[in-house]
Length: 298
Image (cartoon, rainbow, N blue to C red):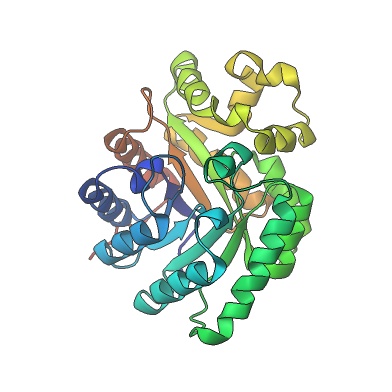
């Protein structure tokens, strides 16, 4: 799978009207980015269906799920969907699977009590389904932040997809995964040189995540404290999690992840008023030269 080093993660790729999402994916491919990532959350579309629609609209762009929630479909359905997409679009689909978060799982009527055990059992069931499927070689990534889930990603998957992490986490994740597994972190970005404007967009983005224990516990292991989480996030936390500045400054943060062991980095452009595809594309156009991307010719 040839996807280069930089892709795009954006919630509206699985939330906006399909036509707008497909047009955005076409533009992202034209700019030379190697992947787009679709999420699953409250109000989103169905990520595996959306992945197929974006794959069909583009020619070379890889599409990953970041992530498909294991509580939303049984293991055989997940495996069968991945195999179907892998067969239809060889070498262009990545399956990211995750346990989500307790409030979201409870809203589906499930018990989040033992997420690691749930993931392990789910992978067992996916593997049991494998003999019934064609084995197209679709990479399987786990949403993983802390050591035990990263170890599971190392032992039972092709790698890990991390979210809301600084390069220091990427270095720790690579150490746990070892050299033979994919590591694809997400990195939020704001192409803006005004600190107040950039940090305001960053804090608006971080607000929901600073209510979720999975992220807070991971950040505590990286040395952040409750003082950093108060008031929408300290400048130290904000600047660690959201890269902002001119295009070269933002690109430097992506290179930091790559230097720390990432194989590919999915950047998420943040808008001043919340997610906005038009604003995201403007930022992606500005960033493309800093990443030395080659525009697509088809």
